[in-house]
Length: 120
Image 1 (spheres, rainbow, N blue to C red):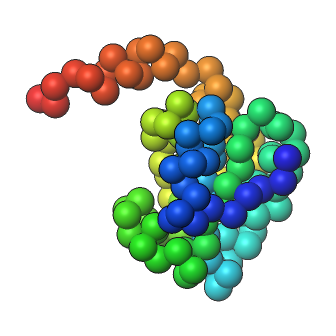
Image 2 (image 1 turned 90 degrees about the vertical axis):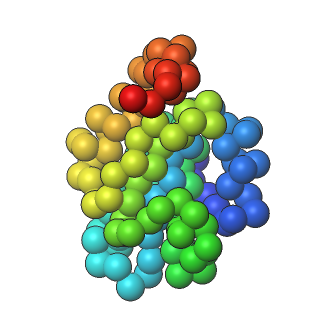
């Protein structure tokens, strides 16, 4: 599957209709973003069961602010509409693969139970 572009208007629907969504926040002027793009594209071809999305932070500034993006590239991973990973910086292929496998193997019942715990 190729990557899809996400906007403020399409983010919620994308999270609703896909189990696992990776989101790459990037900008055209960002060198590390351009270096990460082929790695991200290759992973999207390798994992058709995962939705790979991109957010152009220049075009979608309000979405980037709402997501708390302070550095790009930033990769976020959602599983069952829940943010389960967020990290700035370009990953290499092995690092991205590790994130994808980690998200796929999460025990979501445990994640939800932990999220329900009162913050101490």
